[in-house]
Amino acid sequence: MIRHRASLKDLSILIACFLIGIYLLLEYDIFRNSDGASAHDKTIELDEALLLGAIVAIGLLIFSIRRYIEQRRETSRRTKAEQHVRILAFQDGLTGLANRRQFDDALTVALATPPREGAVHAVILMDLNGFKQINDGYGHGVGDEVLTVVAQRILGSVRADTLVARFGGDEFAILARHLAGPEDATSIALRVIEALRKPIQIGSSTHQVGAGLGIALIPQDADSREEALRKADVALYRAKDERRSALRFFEEEMDERVQERQWLVQELRSALLTGAIKASFQATVEMRTNRVVGFEVKPSWIHPEFGEVTPERFIPIAEETGIIHELSMQILRQACVTAAGWPDDLTLSIDVLESQLKDKELKDRILGVLRETDFPIERLEIEITEITLVRNLEAAQHILGALRSAGARIALDNFGTGYSSLYHLRNFKMDKVKIDSSFIRGMLSKDEEAGVVRGLVGLAQGLGITIAAEGVRNADQQTSLLLSGCEQGQGQLYSSTLSANDALKLLRTNSSRYQLA
Image 1: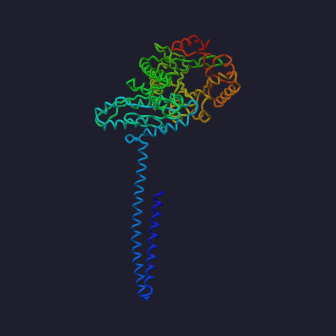
Image 2: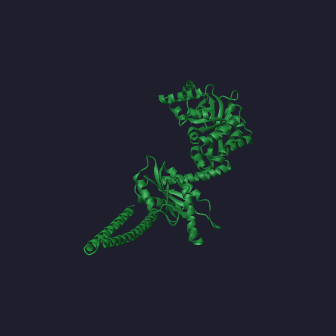
Image 3: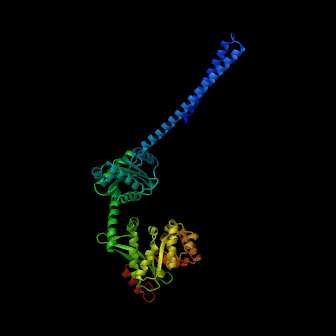
């Protein structure tokens, strides 16, 4: 824009100078011939001079305009060239990713804006496995195409606000800002590894590449750009020692957690194949009579070498790896077979997790297991947490609504900890709500906790919904809950988590009225 203005100014000055020159020339000519010529001759000479001046002025004007247009085109060309140079300065020419310079700048900015307490920035350095063989065996053209595919797969594995860069060759880097914690960095790295498992097809040839990833966390590991990159590189070196796709954190503690996670994934897959994960049961009782009204099924895993592996450890991994779909149906099938030997009025409760709601065939899978085991759907109770419900309203409405229409009961778990409202309770036609155990623990010592319990009980009663309490541990809690109007209870006071045989023994012990002793 500045150059355009300068060109306009030059053009205006040039035209003005020419016009002034012509004017002075005419004035001088008229003055020179004014004494020796007649008035008629002077008029002719003046007309000729004016015509000549006009022709000269028009010619110069055309020249100046053409010159201005050429200057403008040149300015536009230079501007585009400068923009292209700036793009090249910050972008990898082959893959279109950020380059080392842009990555360094972004990392500097990230260091200047520390994450909130407990959160982290993650610097992930990545190196491909097997890429040299592709370059050597098929040529650099094929190698470049492989790198382009890898770049797109990495981009597809991260959030939109995550920066992905190529440093050169088969070296990539990821800058993930404001993660909730180290586990989020693990998830990013595992998604990248998973994305590269699929072979890459280039023309008629198929190529398999893996990756080693080294992770450094900010601010835990580094407070400078150089230190963050150095520590991520150290972690990468250790990952490359595996000679397969692997990730490593710089911190030993984080490294141990990653190795434990990888071990759990392998062992979990093996346990699923061998049926080592069993259905276990926790009783739900009617507090007024202490009568067992049903059981909630929970997965139980006793590892032959390391003993019990709690659901809190393996369920999140099962969700992330997709194992949860097969695992949940396996547990439901076991539970239905066991529950077939119970009295007909006892319910069987199962949890539906957030990742399961993404399975469009979940309803058909559940109904298929019920048909296979000949278990009545009217005895099945589906439990879903408040947070899962709110995050997946449409899917929950579709799947849970269809199951309820088929005869299943729907229970809202962890009631009071999420975002439930009267709208959700009415819209989803809940049959039961379960007060979260955190309120039960504090209800005897904290007036506000007791007030919350009374409020939740009153809300459920007003809507005609069965109200249950989780985590009941002693008789004083039961008494307080009974006084508030709570109907059912679950917890250590009534039953620990039982095997299928122990659950049946519990019922047989109280066979007269199916009551607890």
